[in-house]
Amino acid sequence: MNQDEYMEQLKMAGEFHGEICGGIAIGTKLAMYGMELMGMELNRRHKNLIVFLEIDRCMADAVQAVTKCSMGKRSLKQMYYGKFAVTFYNMDTGEALRVSDADANKKDKIKETKHEMIERFKNTPAEDLFNVENVKVDLKESQMPGKLHTAVWCSVCGEKVSDGRHLVRSGKPICISCAEGSYYELIED
Image 1 (cartoon, helix red, strand yellow):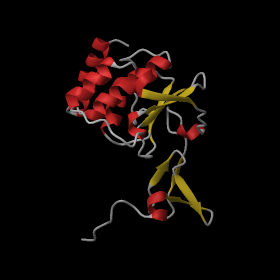
Image 2 (cartoon, rainbow, N blue to C red):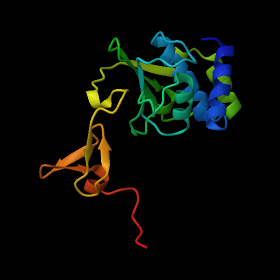
Image 3 (cartoon, rainbow, N blue to C red):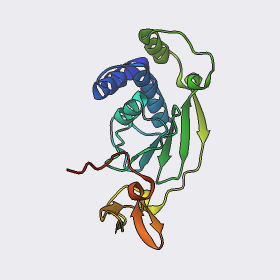
Image 4 (cartoon, rainbow, N blue to C red):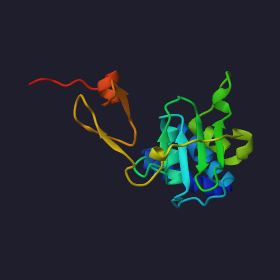
């Protein structure tokens, strides 16, 4: 991975995100490194790649921009762990690598400007910035990309729930928002 390639990917990720910030600088280099380790080319969609994001901050946009994985294609999975880490999973081979930002796990943070951070990420070898772990990923058929795998209708609200994202209570399907509460509240007119 060369410096010019990093700057090119950083620019594209910044355009996708709307600006270049620290998370975009980190996420771009992390995603490029993950793709390199998986033996996959940048700037093209790989139908055998699934990426698991462990954070829902700026870094996530950089990973999406670099890998071309997306939630709509079901090749990008959001895990909401709040960690600066991403797992790259090759569905064809079963190989999975979890790449995490080594700096994020340090108690003493490096004091640097955004420009200094970008320069550091541009000039530092990826293996010095990130931790890599071999992991096993076990996906159910309903979690795989492709067409709709299953559908049930919630016994409370009547809405369709796709791909096993429901619970069963008293032998009946119920959507998670009816079972556990929702992020929204209906307003009666």
